[in-house]
Image 1 (cartoon, rainbow, N blue to C red):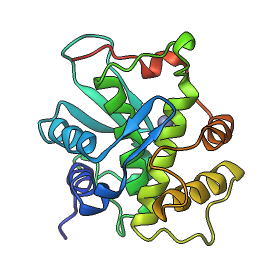
Image 2 (image 1 turned 60 degrees about the horizontal axis):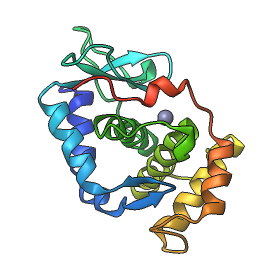
Image 3 (image 1 turned 30 degrees about the horizontal axis):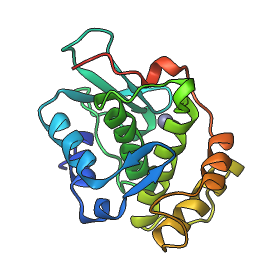
Length: 197
Ligand SMILES: [Zn+2]
């Protein structure tokens, strides 16, 4: 049995025509298709790699020039050689995770800074990534039942649907940004600061 590596699934996702639909401005952050093409190049060159983690996150390295990692939940699978493989079927929500973390990688590589005075806060990075991730899941046919389970997931899925059908965006209104920002959980601001190359 041939198993598809997570890397291959990530490249396939980030280079899929669906990604052309993910194009919006969220507060002062921009999310647009070319960013994902660039992240795909970095993944293909192994400058960004995936590793199994307790939860999903983007993990900037502390030293310039070192490899960056995207941690994906261990349930995504690993073969006998330790290579991360895509579980079958590869769920729309897993595509969403790929795009969510690619958003964090993008803003990191673009050196978008987290400055309270300029109003880009950790929650805004998380809000933008969450919206892009849910747009992705929906574009791949995410089925509402039995998920999403949490209020945050339900809210993000609903907003993503409104962006995709053109009801809101491409410049996301301030009320929606505030609502999503308030709902998402974030790690430390350092997670979003560029410190590699
Ligand atoms: Zn995130």
